[in-house]
Structures are given as C-alpha cells and as structure tokens.
Image 1 (cartoon, one colour):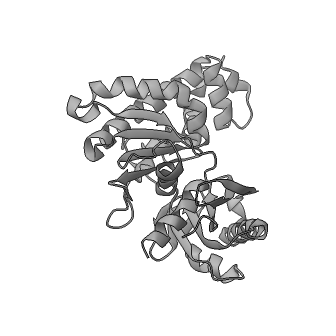
Image 2 (cartoon, one colour):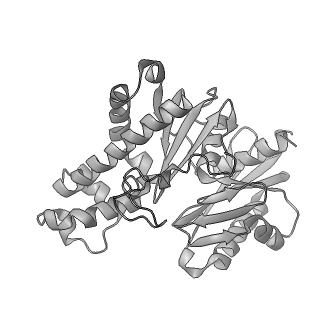
Length: 317
C-alpha cells in the first residue's frame, strides 16, 4: 500500500451516518453526514449509505482501495451480515451484498461492529497508538464496546465479543429494547439517560426535566451539569453500572487502557474518567488495576475507525 491510497469509512449510528475519506497517514481529506432515519426502513438507510460513499468517492484525488463499515448490532464480518441491531430495527441485513450491488465499482467492503471498528481507529491514529491491549467504550445513543487484544480486534467465536451494552447487570432491572432487563445500555447511554429520567420523574416534581417535552439525552446531560437532583440520580445510577463493567473488563481482559468515546462519552469524559479510575482499586486486585490508564478518545470522526478496517483487512490478505 502506498501513501496515495485512500479509504472510505462509514459509521452507522442510531441518528446519523458519518462518512470520512482518509489517507494512509490518517489525514481526513473529506467528511460527510446524513441522517440515519431508521424508521424509513433498511432499504432507505442503505441507499443513504451508498449515496454517502459516492459523495466521498467523487471528491477523491487518488485511488480508493476499499470501504470500511462499522455498524451496531451483531456484525458477521465474514459474511457481511448485520443482525439484531435493535436501535436500527434490523433483524438480519446482508449489508455488504446490498451496498456492493448499488456501487458502480467493485471496491472491497470490510465490516465490523462499531465498537471494534472505532477501537481499531484508536490504535492506528488515536490515544491508543502503541498500545496493543485496551478496551474502548462508545457511549452514545446506545452503548457499544470493542477490545484490542495483542494488536487484534477481539471477535469471539460467533462475533459477539464485547457486546456488553446488552449485558444484563440486573436481570430484574429496566426493560431494554433487546428484550432483556437491566442491560448496561438502559442506564449508561443516551437511551439510558432518558429511561432513567422518565422512571424517576414522579419523585422529582421540581426537576427542570419535569417541564421538558420529549426528554432527550442532551436534556439530561445539561441538567446534570446544572446540578438538577433528578439528573444527578440518573448520573449516579449510570456511573455505578459503568464501575461494574470496567471491573468486569479489567479482570477478564487485563487491558492496559480504557478509552471513552462516542457523542455522549466525549461530553461526560471529564466527569467520568476520574471516577472510573478512582473506583477500580476497590473492585479489583492490584495486579489488575496497577498501571491501567483511562483516556478520552482522540479520534475526531467516528468513521475513522471503520476506514481503518480497510488498512487492517488489506494487510491480512
């Protein structure tokens, strides 16, 4: 591969589709965004994915050698299928086949779950450069995660590794969109913030959120910053669930670093990272937590990680 080769990355989010065109050095040459609008159906979303790819392809001044796509849900990177992406309403979508069929050329398409894809981007160009063992949390509309172990993405036997957003930490807890109860995502995410605010609203009639129509995750975050009692209750609940998941990942994967990203993750990083770092020693042995770093993602576009799937995939062919 030469420095003049380019890659396109696509990040499929619950509310937006992010596209990026990068070179081998990680320079962003062009970006594009489109709404996801999953309620319009998978066909409409796929058409927008293809349109975004075409937009960046038209801006490229050097050869594009591949497209990388990061998606929520259960992603089979071998068959190119996305299953059970609950925030998109996708049960089983042959995404690679559908996108390839609409592209005018035969660009190779590499796929991964969004957590692993962004983690790869952190290893290539972000805060985890030079670190071969770390865990990445993507806190946004939902909760995604990925891990790099010995420099490789952790997939698992059925490509379900690190699907911790839907780990039921409390089987009697809040009902999740996946059908389980007490999933991490229903507490530590935009969806979780809203669910928490709605669950406790009657207990805090003086909350600023009590007079808010159609509460959003951003509303809850702003209320947290303002010291609103209801919002702080939601925050404390989210942090406790994150303490649990950090400890679980620390003792099972023994990472050297935890990286926090995602739209909401970036917003809360300054408040969250010191809490996670100070709490881990009370939940794990010194041999596990000593030397572990906590850092905010340095990747400026969520689509950079998916673009890195191209470099990673081609290097292994």
